[in-house]
Image (cartoon, rainbow, N blue to C red):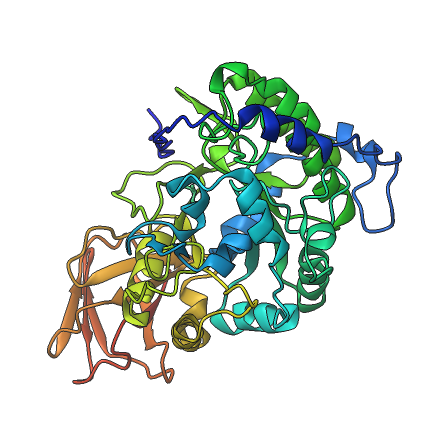
Length: 459
Ligand code: FHN
């Protein structure tokens, strides 16, 4: 039986329905019909005719399998609040992007706050260069989070960064172009079910009366048309990161079909909907910050924070160390997974300095040891106390967490070792092999304080 990783969180509900009618009609005003994309699309779009062409899953997954490491970006009007609203603080350890829901901020008020969102320091090239310097190969940016605010130019609703804020720029367009130029895969997060702004969206039961919601209306008025815009106007999209599942398999199927119709090569995250044994997306997502426990048979990914929140909080200083992140990366990749590591830019559009510093250190490690990560598969030798292994062709990469004194013993090898080399510095190591056991002679000092890697070329 295939393991299932998706965890759908239970949402706390508070019903404050006093303003529901007023807000319902006000919010409806800004949702309007969007012109359908013309068949064929523009030069950088997937042609509509390609929609009918099946693309083999393994072919579509090739980049995902190879790339291993991506940058998650949670950014929206909540970033400006930075974890505090009217003196109420989001406790450290919980998500600052949930501030609207946590304090039941009325839609009308949150909309006013969003009016003031003006990230004038946003520089897409800087973000993309940082991702590159970190060794990240794809970027997943929030096009719309649960607060319902579109971080791109949307004709579906004026409630978007171009029409609603003094900023007036389309950061997703700028990021997609910067990504394309740099050779980084551009991907979007889209909250397809949860929407606290739309009267029929899931999750806001403090402004809107749950019993009056028509979820299909939300899907047709907002979720699907906005996805259509994203998949039509922003060039090739590597994957759409859906979150928190869907109410029914039928609705999830509609979303999947829509993506496939517009961009057949685009991948779909597992959280689009998962029903018993049926995975509707292309790969599994673990729970937030989840680490594998072994035995995973499918393509999978784990989204993780660098401190404890996704969206920016000025109170959260609980940063993971670069060493911890490198350990996680190795652990994840040694079990065949991908690591999607989050940054939460500020309301001004700046990635916080503690994140930048950590990412540079991780990037420095990957510069030396990247061949033991990218394009590798499960390690052939699992469950070793000293560290982990990955494999590419006939090379086994031994990632040493605990550097032993003098020699390292490795058991469970099925082939003869031809050479052993430290990736840091390229120094060859003496070794002996007997059956499935290899003894490697090590220098006294670990070349890397976090994880040192030895490449074993085998027959
Ligand atoms: O509710 C979201 C949360 O804000 C964040 O986007 C994470 C990222 O994996 N996903 C949801 C919770 O699982």
